[in-house]
Image 1 (tube, protein in one colour):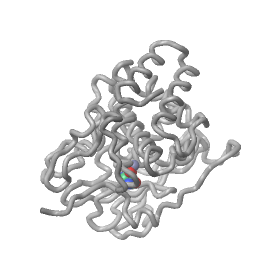
Image 2 (cartoon, rainbow, N blue to C red; image 1 turned 135 degrees about the vertical axis):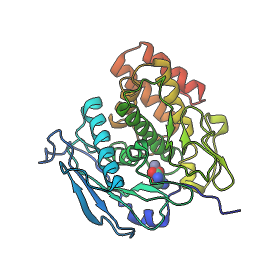
Image 3 (tube, helix red, strand yellow; image 1 turned 90 degrees about the horizontal axis):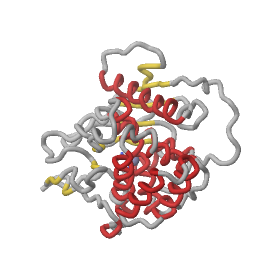
Length: 320
Ligand code: ASN
Ligand code: ZN
């Protein structure tokens, strides 16, 4: 059959990634730090050259291209959750303009954050247009949030945490735009992205990692939900899109145990952990779990959040 497909970073993406480390003092106020989004969407016109032709700027009316309009709206939704949910002005906390390029490459079956902007392909025989699921848009933008905060190294456990944080904020943005409580959310990442040639419902499931697809071309969803099933591999940057299932499931367990809007308490604990400055760039799952416990205590005291959090990490086999 056809070669197995994955969502690993490809060579083009590695070339594009220009990771910067942002350390030290809070940046000075910038002209764009005004509590409003500053979005620009470009059309790469099926070439692999960035950013491409500017097609929609902030405040401009929607045009005819639904992909452009979805990217613009997805950037806006992510900006809004950061601002309203966490009082953060854009991904850098300082009004960073949000830039996306759509129609990247020919039959390009992926989307990515290149260190400076988001990039979306139109898909192929396996994946549809990557702007279709708002959680995928938010996932890519959340890579920017992580870059500007904990800057988790994209390999092994810190890499899987980097991936998981993007899934968490991706899912939270979807729940926020749908005004959904944790019990009503589907906890899928990329629902509606797979074409009808693939047997599956999404890219990943935070509720039931390992069950999103099972298909001749894609193979079976390889995600574990707990430490005893942790996958040791050199592929996919040491399994960053695989082992992210473990912290993803811990977040799901916490959010559904607490109930209500997931961004208000579970999401706040993850946000505080990511932005609090105590995480090392090479944090392990256990380091991250302990940092969430400290963040929960600082934010909510020793109440039900703390108890639910210890239970969630214990259920996935990560020590706190
Ligand atoms: N879409 C993938 C992601 O955001 C691309 C990558 O970075 N491997 O994780
Ligand atoms: Zn990612």
